[in-house]
Length: 188
Ligand SMILES: Cc1cc2nc3c(=O)[nH]c(=O)nc-3n(C[C@H](O)[C@H](O)[C@H](O)COP(=O)(O)O)c2cc1C
Image (cartoon, rainbow, N blue to C red; front, side, top):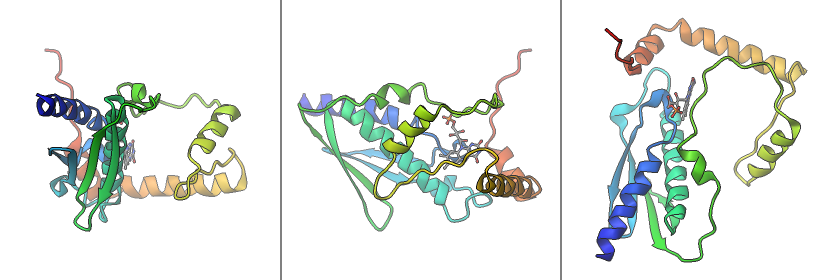
C-alpha cells in the first residue's frame, strides 16, 4: 500500500518535472521510477546538432527538469538528493520527511512559460532586480545586470544581434528549428 502511494506521488512529481523549459521544446529526457528514487537520463535522439552541437543546452534543459522535480518532491513531502554519474545518469533519491519547508516556487511551475511577446520597453524595477540578484548568489551561479545604453550593454547587444543574424542565415539552423515547430490545427 505504502509503495503504491509512493509510486503515485512519483508520477505526480514527474508531471511537474516535465513542465520544465527545454531548447526548441524538445523535452530531451527519460524518467524511470525506482523504489526510493527517480532516475533521469538524456534522450540524445532529441539533441539539436545545428544549434546545440555540444549538448550544452540539452543538459541545461535536464537541469531545469531536475530542479522542477526537486521542488515538486518537496511539495509532496519528500526531501531530495541529486547525484550524477559519468554516464549522465541523474539519480534523485527521495525520502519522506515530515519537516519540509514549503517552497513558493512550486506554485510557479504550472504558470511559468516562455514569453515571446514584444517587450513594452519598461525597465525592470530595481527592487525586483535586487531580489533576483540576491536569490541567485551562490558559489557557482552569479547574475550580472547591465544597464540599458551603458557601454557594456551596447557591446553585448551588438553581439546578440550578430549571433541572431548568423543563425537566421544558417540553413541547417532554420531546417532544424522548423522540424521542431508544431502548428495548431486550423479551423476549417
Ligand atoms: C537551454 C534553453 C535554451 C533556450 N533557447 C531559446 C532561444 O534561444 N530562443 C527562444 O525563443 N526560446 C528559447 N528557449 C525557450 C524554449 O523554446 C521553451 O522553453 C520551450 O519552447 C517550451 O516552452 P515553455 O518555456 O513556454 O514551456 C530555451 C530554453 C532552454 C531551456
